[in-house]
Image (tube, rainbow, N blue to C red; front, side):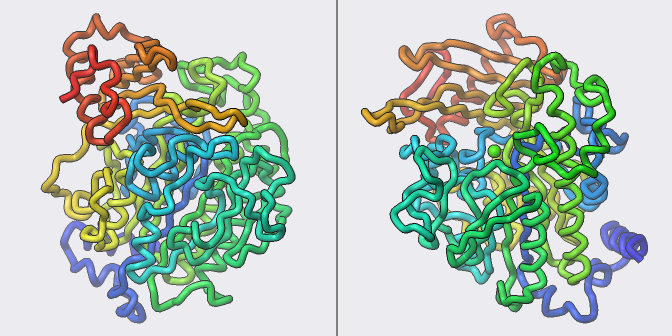
Amino acid sequence: MKNLNQTFQYLGMIGLIPLSSCFGKTDSNSKAQMAPSVIYVFPDQMRNSAMEFWSSERYARHIRYKGDPVITPNLNRFADESVVFSSAFSNCPLSSPHRGSLLTGMYPNKNGAMLNMNSSRPVSSLRDDVVTISDLLGRNGYNCAYIGKYHLDYPTPNDPDRPGHYVEDKAPVWDAYTPPEKRHGFDFWYSYGTFDVHKKPHYWDTKGTRHEIREWSPKHEVDIAIDYLKNNAGQRDSSKPFFMMISMNPPHHPYGSLDDCMEEDYNLYKDKSLEELLIRDNVDTTLQKAASVRYYFAQVTGVDREFGRLLKALDSLELTDNTIVVFASDHGETMCSHGLNDPKNSPHTESTNIPFLIRYPGKLKPKVEESLLSTPDIMPTLLGLCGLSDAIPQEVQGHNFADYLLTGQTTQPLPESALYIRNIDGMKDKNGQVTTYFPESRGVKTDKFTLALTIDRETKKLKEILLFDDAADPYQLDNLSLDDHPAQKRELLKELALLLQKAEDPWYNERILADMIPYE
Ligand code: CA
């Protein structure tokens, strides 16, 4: 039956029969009139290569590196039904900064989420007055639900069970409870700040009641999501479209034992050698972390299964046709590439290149899209696909891909570069609280090159240059001399200057490295 449907959809797409006859169901005329619902699923530390379909011929020609030897049957099927971005770029590849840009369409310096949030960093917290995608969808007739890790609040003493106390017994704390006034339009809440015990997660619900769970967090979160879809307890108004974000923590460290993943998934990898699993040309399998790859891939396969279960529920509830579904992630995972211990927060492909698959049946023709997608582009693009381009706030900095995705045409040129950002702690007060942030690195990613400049925190002078020819050297093994490549140097620095200006970045405001970067 499914194949027959796909055949009709295909005939519709190539114009042999009207599209409406391919996607309409007799009982869904009213649904077809309704604005589309949106489900945005984003596990945390999942790199783009960690999806099995990249190893198949149809997809492999769109990327320059090898796909990981990982098992993801549900994502494989979903990719065939989706626009698959091969070059989605997490500009500031760290939890809170990515999430801030995702929700607001703005770079970290504009939305308040410059650093990963914890109680030692009062300088970093999503601005209360910022307008998020959920604020806008909520105002435009959507029910909005947030399930899973949030990590966008500076933790304050606001435990609903013990007013005036933190949600952990001692500060500093990573975890946080987000009170209703800070939920930015999400009217259904089942979330926490940051917590990495994958089989003992906890959540605060809409009313602030804490739930202690004893099962693998992605499984539990998809159960909550399916309940929301079924709407058995009146979680939403079924006459309205909904916007649901599901932020799964896995894949995310720890990756060390069966406490971190499902055993059935671990069994798929446990007998493979490290050399069979870590196949990138830039990897160091002698690092202590190397053995964790088995758990990393096991977590990916577990996430894939839960994602598949969600899609199946959408099908059985006949919600698939009018629901936009995105599968993405926060940032990648270096997993022993480049000898790095830090899994993220670097300009390398393993850290910045994230999954981004978007399915909108009958509206978006499945394909692989190679243009660069930056994190701030996601919010305006989703609003555009929901027919709300006019509602996108002026201060949004991302590009709206909606027209291009819907029609293949665009009045505005597509972005050809993306801004790389790394911030670190700046000044601290006498109590050790971080009161400013320091913009340590900025860079530019184009189709062919990655350039990242790092400055010294005392002198603000150039400390390090990374320049990779991603076309010739996809594993970024050879750090090229910028001066030996004058044409590329000119072009990339000019592009960087434009990106920094457009982002109203501190490097532009302070004219950092003005002897090198040709600011206007
Ligand atoms: Ca993260």
